[in-house]
Image (tube, rainbow, N blue to C red; front, side):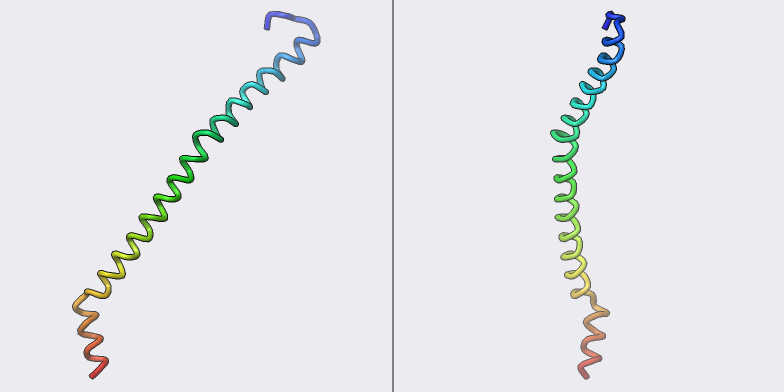
Length: 73
């Protein structure tokens, strides 16, 4: 990095940017992508559990049962 030749002035910034680019791509690939997959899976699981709970709650509501019996009569 201390070399001041014309070639070094062109190659040093390219080498630094290439190094940081590889480091950034590695972090994205090995950390952020799996975290996103896990978060998406957890979100899907929680949404399904919430919908199942809402379905049970809706079917167990007394007003709903009264309305169903009135409709049958």
